[in-house]
Image 1 (cartoon, helix red, strand yellow):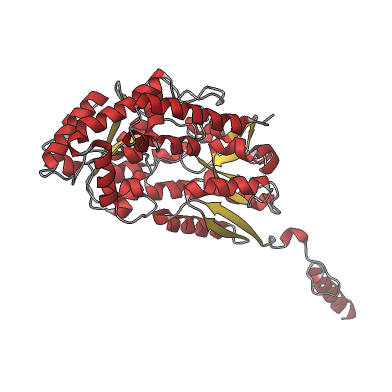
Image 2 (cartoon, helix red, strand yellow; image 1 turned 90 degrees about the vertical axis):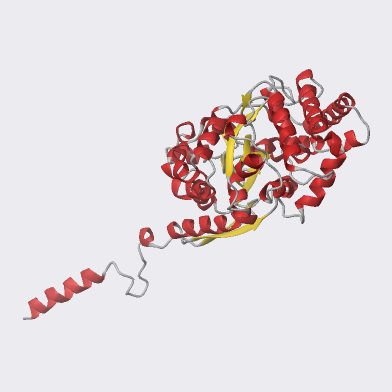
Length: 449
């Protein structure tokens, strides 16, 4: 009996030997729960996209409950200065939004985590996963430092309100394919939809859309900046021709309503309170027939006015249908001083490269995704129909360009209407803007090795 009890006691002791039930017992490190960490996350998704970010983080936490995300929203035009300041003091957050044309300002090799080792470890070939136009914008000095958040392509689409088009006595068969036809059609619309001396409903407002000059210039076979991004080409014949076309359009369509001044007055009256998306407000309020923007406009319009009979077509360039520039786009990177690089990588990968993460974020907005396979999801065509066909066609026509420092150039282009109202000619304006842009480029590149 003694030997049997000894055998049983020995068996019990042996069976419990691996558990931390004895004084000084240690649990197997491999079985320990992952360390709980908290990551700071800067992004620019406000308005209707805010809840989508919340959902994105919630889905991530289902997979990684050990990683808390402290998010911080900053409006797009305020994000650049915030990121530049943080980069200059090496205080970038763990994960943050940036535009791919900010690399020169941010100096990724000094302030951001090089993602090459993570991509290699996880066997992720971005050229096989991402839409082709998105791949090049991930690199700085031969290494990947950020991954795309949303597509930068398909940001040059002619959206239109079919109901208003029909009220003007027109149909899809009348849609223009070049600038001459666009101007003629716009004149018909403004005549048909405005009976008095004050503008009420317009075809298109070029003034808040002067950022599109870049896309039109590229479609016109020209450039706004040299290939090395150091020399302004704003006064090149191709660029001047586009700005002159904008000016001629305003005179031909709105001359009897006061031209530039009349459009400014109409825009101020119709747009209402500043919602952070002023250019699209008149379109959402069904006071504007056409709106040139990117694929993100679908979500904006549906959030603002789901009843709009929204349709889309290719943009009528000066010579024919065209897409737009695709150089810069919103991406995500990791601050170099993060205390939790592995956790930051898990989050970054989820919100950029994972179908369950970024794929769902893009599909919720019905906008194209940097992950090529997501765009083949039949949900897009089922939900958008002809809209999705037009968006895909626009993506096929996207034209790569050079780094032109979007935010700074756009601020110059947006000042063109004010200069015209003050009496400057298009030639004078473009000559002056070329000098101002060149001064900016000289300052930007000074001291850069």
